[in-house]
Image 1 (cartoon, helix red, strand yellow):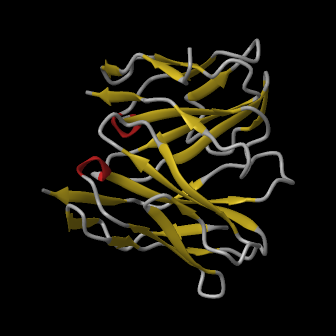
Image 2 (image 1 turned 120 degrees about the horizontal axis):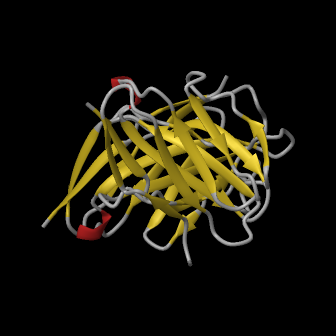
Length: 117
Length: 116
């Protein structure tokens, strides 16, 4: 079975600075997808960034980038130039590649990020 | 609508009551998922539909939980004889085909269920 671990329950960063959120996972699969979702107080899960395991290059989306270390099963999220609107819960998630009937997401327990003015 | 819509947004039920939670996915979306998110936790998978077919219900915690999607669009999650441990946010998500990297899930705002 796959598991996702986020070891930082809470993080704090000053506005305009950079912060890194950690995520590790366990799987015996060779190919899979990894995601970071943001959940603001509205409760809606918003996709931040995604990575395919077979791609060596780390994904980037504007101020968001990942450090994907497949051998170490690590998938950290870096947020540059932090903004007040980045304050939210951040969830790391794992998905097996298509082939089975269900492509469900397996989530970590989340990291609450507070951006301080 | 433009997004996934869930109703009600909040539901308070007395222990033992039955509840029904509704999800309106994005029009035309084939895949629909229900997740349960306990306080301070990440969402956990409950069940999955592809059109009207319930292909996976392995995450439903007990036989008090039942989900349906009779016409392949709107879905209802029903919980019978609610217990305090059922208190959680119930999230619905949909995608336009089998959920994957290129067809990521779109989530609703969830229903917060409180059982007293």
